[in-house]
Length: 544
Image 1: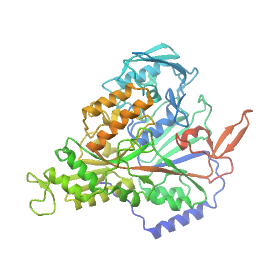
Image 2: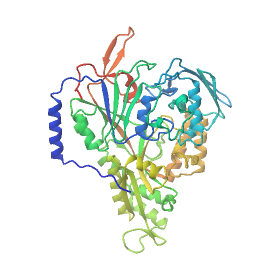
Image 3: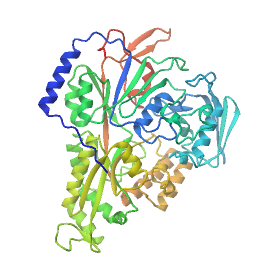
Image 4: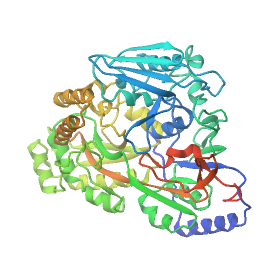
């Protein structure tokens, strides 16, 4: 497998190019195009919300599609989107009855109805559909169209995350009912009900969407959004500084110089994500938890946070972001202790019997391949440090990176890897059943093949419980179990940092309907929460 190489730009050349570009843009006339250009290190895979598994696809899908509901800006309650209202009926077989908005149109002009919601559910539950979303709906007893604007779902038992699962993007029945959902050309030319309509997808270059003039909440303030695929972070930074890109997820080592650029505004806050080193538990090398515990002792995660994240993050001890109520503060991160790591490996039967510096057992050296996706400088640097630290332990680690789509298809989804460095972006709800429950090993997100009967039972109980305090106790115990098993070496929770050109504003309306510009706010639900209100006032910014 060919490994993607990284482009290296000498610092002097970078400054020369940057200087020339800044000189050039400084003479450009005011911007005439009301658009947002975003940067991404990886291309999308499926512009279909029930098939997508990666963040790039999810970001575009959030612009093109709508769910029935979504979280409010404070991540405390749900607000209606395609659903105007809903009613929850408790009992042994709880029900949710959604009253849908009337007059909502798909981008091709066809009216949205409850039949589209039922079709989306049916496609997710179809065993032929290559989706990892099925576990969110496996407790549904029945889904019914009561009339074109009323949809009812009945559950087999109480299901606390149930309402939140209907934030899933809805897909159009009239375009897909006769298609193979996995291979249809629709997945590259989507039609949704969202605030932006699909225009163009040039593989590994860009994805373009434009404002939907018929959007039920009103036409977005931006005319179009261009999602540029720039796999090299040095090029992304250059594009941001020369105003070829408006929005960019800032890496820790870039923060200081980005924060000193007058035309950029920097935003940061804790995120619903964490990074980890995951072990394929079908590999005999990693089936003894003493080995996994030893690796967690041998990897200096405080060093990773200090030198790779420049302090913009925190070491975590388990499967939840540390600022959330369901993270167990009593479970402490595994401390860096090389002596303890050697002791655990020795107890597991790994010793250097032939004196070559590599641990061995039953005549076989401890040797494996660690992989991650190319284009992510942080994961690359983490991989290099982990490789060095485990070699100090006597473990021969080969570290390789692969282009994102190959990484997912050939290794992660195929379950064909030894160990990987990845991260999870999570929901505010603690139900991570699809990541950890053993039923999700084959077709869910449990690609490391983790099995723990007590944890399985608790994930199931957590889905039935509505009381927050009782749910907390359930997830705290899950945290303890997974921390003991160490199926991952939990690395850190990063601080989310992003940069945006200062020429973007929110167009708000007062009680009398008068328009007024306001600064873009960072909400708990994210910087993009009010994206449909973003605009570039005329005469501000640079022409592209």
